[in-house]
Length: 253
Image (cartoon, rainbow, N blue to C red):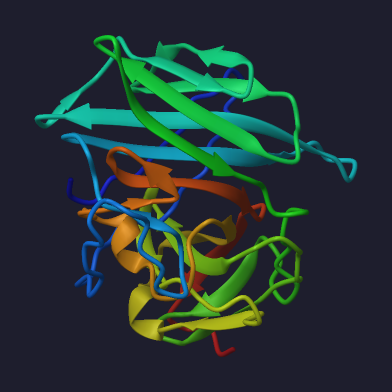
């Protein structure tokens, strides 16, 4: 799979979360079907030809609480699979808008099992970060100078394994950082990504399941990251509310 930008059309669009999907070289090696430990996500050599990207997404309820939804994309032979049985905890998830998606009861752990053509094709476990991160040094409506670097700072949350910073222009990821270490609370988006007259939504992803150095998982991995059976990944993800900035070449930061 090449870059995929996942737009989750969940009922009221509350479950719309975007995450980078670029790839890099993978230095991990097979371990005769056993999980591979590389000080990062648990990696499983695939036992079938499916590619599955599965996420539990945290939703900000607006009063300090978090709800959750599931988003699962299943591909085999370059075709979307629409007739699998996808179960998270006790909920069977229906297929619509190109993925299996539903809201979920909040839980400490989310167990995923997927069946297709009478076979179990995937299993895994994921958990959500403790809270929704918040960008602290920017406000929506800020004007930023064209071609100028942008510093992004955010609040810490617990139960994460990596951070990622993204910039969205015209509903597409325009900039995607690599996965950042858990003690990172700021990141600079290079100024070359900001062109005059455009607006950008800046967001921070708090991730549980992928670690610094696991960037290949977001591209076209040849192993399963925290998911046993297919290649792909199973993660928990909370995303900050978007901060919209406007670019003006005549503005001095």
